[in-house]
Length: 404
Image (cartoon, rainbow, N blue to C red; front, side, top):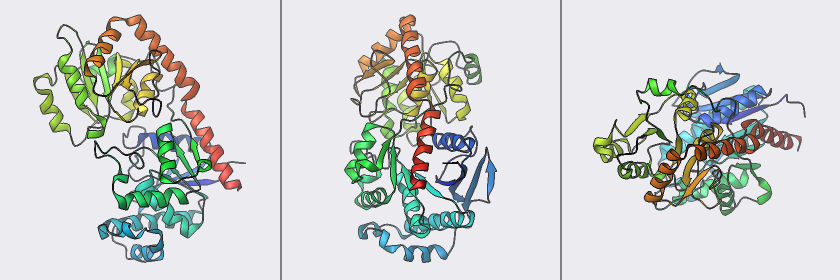
């Protein structure tokens, strides 16, 4: 099929440049789709005028108070499972305000396909819009929208009202994209047919995340000195288990030269800083959010990446592997593992702090072994996780849905 079609990407908080950390994985995908000649429109949840950035057309809300949103809700009342209406009326209003403006853009610009990132709220907005415009509707799942962890109070599906909304959205979408075996199983659990799910591996650009980048730029900017860096790139939220980084830092022998550098921000920042105590800005450095364009240089400066998340490895793991850095990550037993134990890094059990310490020391002392693991990781990224391969699969899916 000739690529003369358009897609509306529904993503509430995505940034407009490569520097923005907010949903950078969505921006990266949208940017490359636009480079392939697809007319890409992104609809965000904020009042803003139409704009154009990096080959992408951006749209937002016309205004925050709009009586038409109430009329839109009444037209789509039967979309909502009855129990889901037992929520704050303002939430339901905002869902329909977002959908109303998405409908406005799609109708005005003659957009051919709807692609929502996350099942809620974006997926619900896509479903409400689809009912009015009749366009093919796809949802990409990312984790919080379908995954659950009662221990960490993680996942909207823990709440019955949202669980039913997610079920409604996913079983009415034309197709679902997932990035891991775990999310595939969660989609089945919600009720999606196997034939309506595609596992499309996430991707990074190995021409941006690569070995031999300048190792001093990042260190000098953040005054990190010349000690080996153990890097973690995660939000400071309970599910990401940054507490484990602090525990590890506290029991690594003082004779081992190293620094733990944590990139990311969130609700636990003050608690984690308090827990780190006198190690702050000595052995442990919290940098907060940084421009996403700095992440490759952060990876270049590090000796290894440690990802403490117990429910799945993030894009940060693939970015580190692309930079030929070994990775220590939590073993999810094949449900969401990018690291191959003993080949590209080490998989450890969640909470096994002593083993994590031993693996860190091993990699710092065995430089040739660390190099071997890192080089293996880069090869795997080039073979399986190049973002251009992901984009080609998404385009094939678009064309299949449009041809039908």
